[in-house]
Image (cartoon, rainbow, N blue to C red; front, side):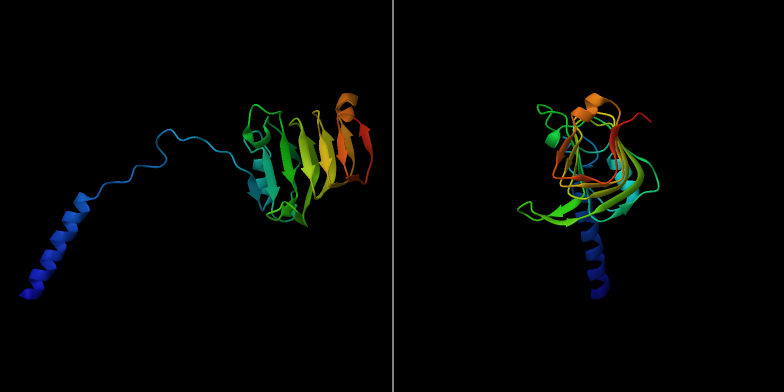
Length: 176
């Protein structure tokens, strides 16, 4: 008899406590500030999405990546998403420590990489394939292109910045 009474009291207590709890608001509803961070990617599919017009201003790979597809870096982005700064896009082919020292370099392989985003920087790694720069301000920083580098116009080529980088193939103006 005591056992039945204890079980009944526990059941009533559980029902009462369940009815008295407040529900958590749905975190997907409401007006939240959007914060755009770096895309840290490990595979070709995520990389391809991250460099698109709906991607992020900085895309950092975490290992070597090979894509069978032609890649296109497009969209207008700002350094650290601060619209008061100049347009800027960064493709980080490396890992770094807390002091921002490069600790590892990665290789990105694709048949072709077209750069449409203005002021795009490829930094501290290797791209294997041909690169087509179609916007001004393309920069290589401590990076290697194992292939050719083509510019859509002479003006775009004149705006190219090579910071301690290497292109193993030709560098020239050539439309596709």
